[in-house]
Length: 187
Image (cartoon, rainbow, N blue to C red):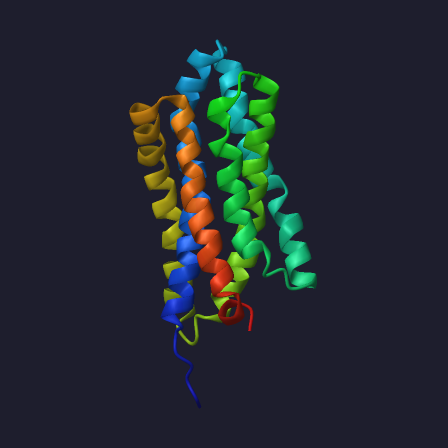
């Protein structure tokens, strides 16, 4: 019986995409007190920001999974982290609660669209080491959530609320990396 090896390079790239996508999930809770203060929100309306993000990223994720099962959607791999970062990165420029909710929902769509295609693609590169390979992919997301808090607060402390725009940088960089590796990831 022939064994297949784990593709460490592909899994590392996908894990990095997972990290960047989930930075936004870690950043948003840290930003809630700042949004609450700047927009004079109640605790309820501030909490609704996180609710909007979580509902968007979780409720529609199975729809993206269904679509990904029916048809390969590898193009979501570079697009999703960019969209997730774009949505959150522009929130520092908004003075409207409604626009803030829309941007947070855009971030949720980016998060929701990455995970099914990311998991499906990562699984392909696990070889005979399914648990090890999927763990490598999953650690990217967990690390992204942890780093997101620190990154968001560092940007705000250094540059003010508009510093959140810096969250777009990892989104652009990983989109480029994923685009440059699409031939490897989608074969």
